[in-house]
Length: 458
Image (cartoon, rainbow, N blue to C red; front, side, top):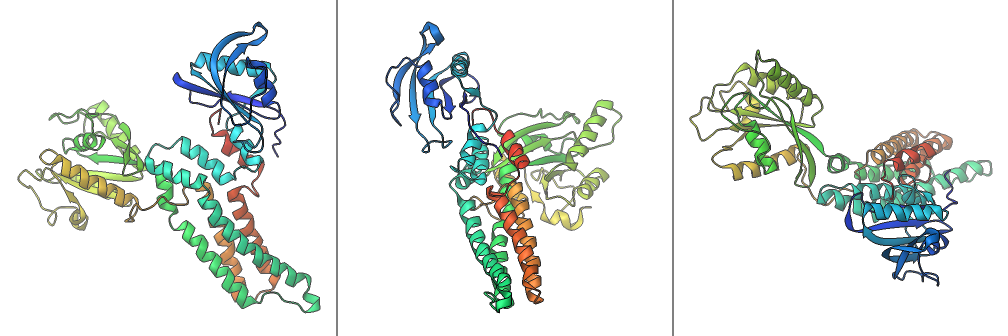
């Protein structure tokens, strides 16, 4: 287990120039090291921002006027003594302050080591530590809100309540086993079965929103497909709100994949425009078609654009067949022109009756509103975007599923009036999985993997 016993330092603000940059020093010698690099005789007062100068080593040459704040343990971010130096945001200057701190006895922090120390010192649990990473990397307001709720302890509270009830049941079962020869039974099979089913219901409530949570946290790739000149690139540009893709009347203008990220009603979407799907002798365009089909294989959703002013062809039918198993939106474009077919008599059959008819050219605002809303609905499998979901992290989902699986086995054992030892074994497995969510029973290799994803300085 990682045991923090030295003092670390790093720049705690993002790389690049800015108005302000912060150098953080954390560990038992933080105050001593800060005093060595600051032009200040009396010690820093706790939690009082102090204007002072950073000086360069033995030369005592001031290099910047800064604001230094001392946070004594345990009331700091890491739970250790912490000094934060707010300097002017020049990368060269901040790097120099870090070098001075290292020369005075600190060590350069590893990625995520400040947050790891906060976890080890009991300031936060593992769910909250992961929420720090998610909050830093949030690209939509809904992502940020979900991460902040987790940082505030929403998941921890719910899991702790389940763990507490499970712990009580385990203790009573263990007592029944320990005192079985004396004839004591602190819980019977029917009562145990009822308690276990209540726990299963609570884990189900956490998992039911997991798909929506993962989508909000991780986003998804949405691929726009169709024949040449059906309006793919026009729809791509309208959703982005900028002319990212070239749009002309010449068929085959788009020959490669164009990908852009956008916030679609709180969901981070990677929108991909593709080459028009058709048979062609042009080697470059053929490669574009191949890449379009390859992008479809990793897509979370497909948008198939059809042109109602031209007869449906085999390429349209093939695209509808290729996307039938994905969350999909069929967009029937150019409804302002005379129709060459209707939804009912089209080759797509029943699928076309659920398509979205639009005119991207004549009524673009209405088209974008309707397409955006439908994409969101299809990605969420018909659910509405309500409050941020409690569960967003795949690791949490997998562990909750493990806990639920163990509880289901325990419920079956209780129904079969199995010996208490059988119930206890499954319940301990469930307890172990729940403890791994918050970090109570998490192996070191898992911790290393989680915190290696952080940036240095956090």
